[in-house]
Image 1 (cartoon, one colour):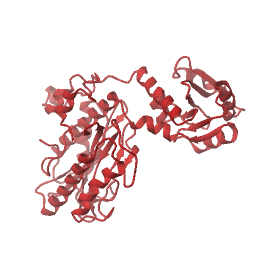
Image 2 (image 1 turned 180 degrees about the vertical axis):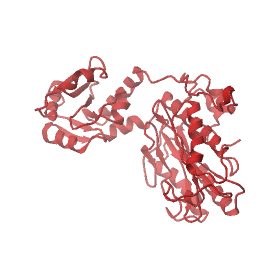
Image 3 (image 1 turned 30 degrees about the vertical axis):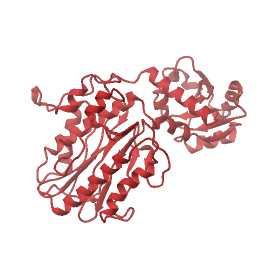
Image 4 (image 1 turned 180 degrees about the horizontal axis):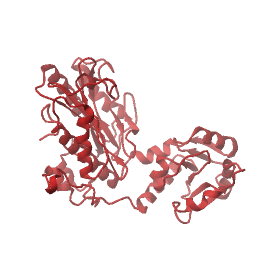
Length: 423
């Protein structure tokens, strides 16, 4: 069962209202923004957003400790990049000099740092965490020998986060004196299930993206280039307080799932498609909408209806305990049964991807993926049919898995070819 937006808010579950993030958000869920004074179409929708706190980052670290213990891994090394940002809110330039955090199962974090960078690192490293330094002539990997001895984990395993560069992994294998294993089971397990606050950010981001697309579609005129049209999506985003825009595709170019270098200006009867998103506190949205500029042909109507039914079938299939591959299967069956198959012939890609602090991240709604859905997991649901030389149709909404089904982030679901944002 898929909840309506109104039911979702009343339930007091995973909502941005319940999380105390955007107190004024309910009104924007039910009514379009009316033109404000000074010629603006929108006002900021992010000014009341509550940012992540130190407690939120500590909760993520505690979650890593739990997953380390469950998987009988003693520690994980987190290098600069997305995972360091996720666990510690730290941005660190990647260079040939090794820097990072070692999160340990006993619930401690220590750091490996070039000695001359220590003072700069202290500006971001949590107070009380121990820092192990190495001089320019020393091997940073041999520090692990001391760390594992100090922490008493020398007989165990140390994981590498999946974005760790190969030369760093090789250095640890050569010099660390401890078994090195893949750390994706830790980082992916932590990031796959979102908190209420994180889902609130994504709910708002998806809402903003849909309002921006709606605004941009209203500005389309025959003869426009995709760049001219795209400027309106960026304008709406800016007024609502986020960055980003979009580059729509017109006509036959919509058959290319990720665009093409071929040029097409907007013409009456064209399929128009845009795939875009924004970010709230680092958490992404991802939305695709497809409309017809002018009167749709019977062929366009036929394909659109099949894609819409496929998306709806996938939403209905969502429930905790269902395999990711089964959600892809539910959508693909509708498309194949309508004659647009088999397999990837016209629906050329998987149904969806995980989404969070990265636009595409673990896990994936793809054929034969046995991973079972859990409440709090977030995905895109984006079936498509691509007919080269004609047009492509794709409809995409992100959703969160709840105990009783899928909740569509940002609302405004497509209900018909002439209702791309619902009623």
